[in-house]
Length: 267
Image: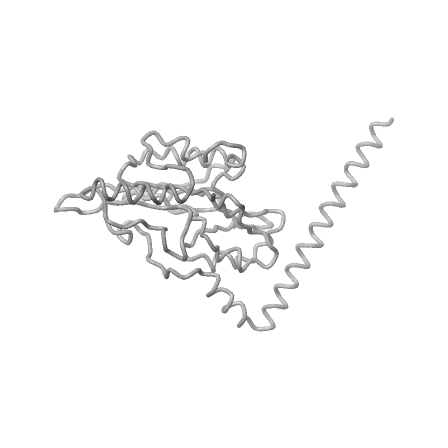
C-alpha cells in the first residue's frame, strides 16, 4: 500500500524541528534569511528548504490564535510535474513518493509551472541549475525508517503511515472532536488526491492552502503540452541534447581522471 503523511496543524507548536531535520537529512546548506512579520523563517520555500513552517495569525471567535502550516510537496497520486518532464527526471516510486533525479534534470522548469501547489524550486545560484523538492525521505522509508520530519516531531503533529489508514484516522479525529477541527481533510481530493493530508481548525484557504479541482492534473498538462508550438519543442530538443553531451563529457572527464590516477599508482 502507498504511504503518506497526516499533518495535524492543531497539534503543531511551531518548534521548527521538522524544518531542521529535513535540512539536516538532505544535507542542504544554510542560506541567508530573515523573519516575516509573522515570524516565518525563511520567508518562503527555496531550493535548500524543502519543508517550510508558515506561521499564521488567525482570528477565531474574536481571539487571535497561532496556526502553523507546513508547506512541502504533497506527492500527488498523479503528479503533474512527472507528466511534463521531458527527460524523465521526475518519477513516482511505489511507496507514493514523487522523487527527482538530479543527473537527468537540465533545468527546463516545466515542473515548476505545472505543479498546482507551486512546490519545485530552482537552484538559481548553480551554474547548471536544477529543481529540488521534498522526496518524502524515500531513501529512509525504503529502508524501514520513517521520514526525518515525522521522526523528529515531538507532538505527533506529523504522522507517517499507509495513506488509507491515515485518511481513516483523519476522519476519526474529525468525528471524535468536532469542536477542534474544521470538517475537511485537505489532500483527500485536491488535484485528484495527494499522499500528504492536512487537518486544521480553520478553512484551508485561511492558512494558505488553495482549493483545486478534484481531477488529476496530468489531464490538463497533457492538453497544454499538445499545444506547444514547434519552435518550443525544438528548443526543448536542443536542451536535451546539451544535457546528454554534458553528461558524456563529465563521464569522459571522470574516466580520464581515474585512468591518470591508476597510471600514477603504478610508478
